[in-house]
Amino acid sequence: MLHWDDLESANAALNAFADFDRKARFGEGPLSNLTMGIKANIAVEGLPWTGGLEAYKDRIADKDAEAVAKLRAAGAAIIGTLNMEEAALGAKTDNPFFGATHNPHKIGYTPGGSSGGSGAAVAAGLCDAALGTDTMGSVRIPAAYCGIYGLKPTAGAISQDGLEIVEPTLDSIGPLARSLEDLEIVSRVLMDLDDPQPIDNITHLENLGGVDCEPAVLETYEKARDALGAAARFALPHPLTRIRFAGFILSSLGLSRELTDVLKNNPDGLSDHLKFLLTFGPERSAADLAEDRKILAETTDAITAAVEAHGAILLPTAPQVAFSHDDKAPANQADFTCLANIAGLPAISIPAGWSSDGLPVGMQLIGAAGNELGLFALARKLDEKLSAYRAPEIFVGNI
Image (cartoon, rainbow, N blue to C red):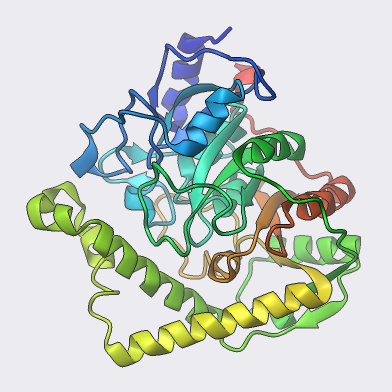
């Protein structure tokens, strides 16, 4: 039985759900005991399909996205759509039209972006699992900041039907959950998974690519490396900040194409900040774009080679823990997560530790294309050793 009044009351403090569907019901199948929320850029029949945009606030989805249809057919109760960063291009989930979503571990702090509603709702127990989207880390960063589990699957493993696209070569729909067990069972419904390939060797990035990380992240990373015996090292052909910027340029280009009609016919439906972000790609010179694409191709080769040689890569999910909505988002937030999107590889973020002020720290594992099940097995090994999951004080079970 779904307790709608309790859910709406709990959501009021977090602003994680944008819309509830009180007609939602459980069905039969492997997900028949799970409630699920869906990021607002993924179509849910009968609910607003806004993509976090004022321009689309009155648009109602006339059918489910393919991923949502699979979840319903497997018995999940799809209870509503979730708040997100405007157009899925952003870092905090502080939406200028639909409001800020708060981290259930600390009100006033970001749950991460752009799937912040998904991360906050799952962490707070408003739903058992959720769908987000990950273009440069937007499933895994909210998972890390909110202390839960999130999967960015192999590129193309989950249909993009019914998804508002940022950049199709980088975008992935991905699930978030409070346990690896729930994350895996949802993943099995969403995609055809190959037999697991054992991962016996793990590598890590030399000097973390020069990225400046907070002490809690570095301490947790060392524990995770020790837990997995990740002794091998690899290097990237370019600085991570430059790689991430090249990915951002590709995202800006892709989203500017997707929003061409809105920019022309309803520019007030976009914030000034988003319109500014959309200028970066189109205003890039041909020579600079060529350099960006060269950097992305060389990075793909390096990441793929490291995974092929060693089985998996261990990295922090983000260089920092969640921060105040009053603070500017750090530029390096997606430096680590962007690599899996650029290379088209699967990656799982798990809760791995805690900062001194009680905020979660996430670690991610990047594996070979199509080896999600092997990656799950490795993530379980690390999860058992670190045992870091902890429910937030704001949790539906405690209300």
